[in-house]
Length: 193
Image (cartoon, rainbow, N blue to C red; front, side, top):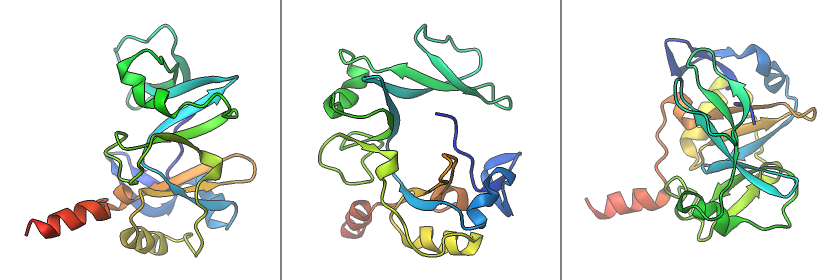
């Protein structure tokens, strides 16, 4: 899976800083094309021909595993992005193994669960959520100010826009400098005051 572009242009000096100017590859978002869905905070996976793969990025000058399937290359950072098969015997892949079901159809998924990314989504069990089945979001969500306000008031990681032709684009709280503080953590902080 290639990196999904951010809907607003990024500052090349600081990629976490965005401008109000739309990214040229994402103009369709602002022309009200496609659907907005919730971006979940997990680990990206893919099922192809009954095999589960996990997304992997490899930094410049780092060794490339023999089973790495490169999908994209970032010329600015020298990073390679791609897939490696999940090793169900490896401790590193134990949460993937817990979520795996042989009945899953080909497609991309998000691994979610109690030990994935700190579980900001509050899931009790490990599972694979198909990206095409993510929660659809309603409302404007097509202007800088609207999106910023929505994300500031919501306990979600961000938004992914899906075009009918398969293109995708995204925006996250982090792009606006907004922290994601899950409700359970907010409650804990209040209790400790």
